Image 1 (cartoon, helix red, strand yellow):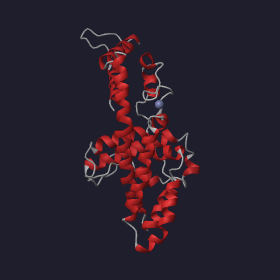
Image 2 (cartoon, helix red, strand yellow; image 1 turned 120 degrees about the horizontal axis):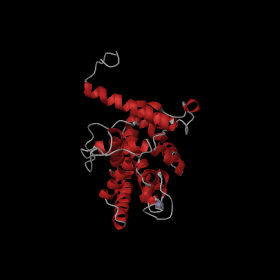
Image 3 (cartoon, protein in one colour; image 1 turned 90 degrees about the horizontal axis):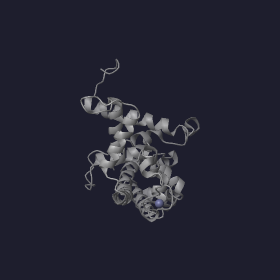
Length: 275
Ligand SMILES: [Zn+2]
């Protein structure tokens, strides 16, 4: 039973669906100002957007890091919670006040700059070319001979979904247009097959974004932090004193922060230091 509803699937599966639904709701609320939900109902494939929150099960092709890590990375992008410098500055302006993008050292770093930085843009280009190739390969395996007549048109049409940075940002942030799904469905004669093709291709794209852009960028940032003697200990101790300064009395027993602050500290630490 859950909120008076009878649940007829196992509890693990149920929790997975519940978390997906909660994440989806959070995502909708975040994007509400950017996307006019009412007018966009027909433009975006909501069923696929929801599916894209799931991890791909039983996929053994990628062994470089676990599927769970990839889902967490993907989730942070969807929620705009990846700890880029614009986020770090809000949380710790005392440490990162004048810091620019760790890769080019010229511009402010936010999620869009992360992908379009002069040091990343060629890598992004290659990742997107790989993504297009993967979509085409996976689609080709699912089509009948008769559909090969339309293959050239299909190839040309697919490229148009990735021919500008703003379209690529949308794809990376899970704003998937209906027309893209329709394009693939026209070839496979099945919406479900199109969902699986894109889900699989996007999953590989997120692995590439993480391994080829995000992790190398984090390594550069860590190096810079080391240079400025910003160790994990420094970050934590300053954070502690900041919280204490806010007026929380130190108890006789030692730890001077209340449970809510401690929870916030923990969340901040995880978000800030975990890549
Ligand atoms: Zn940059």
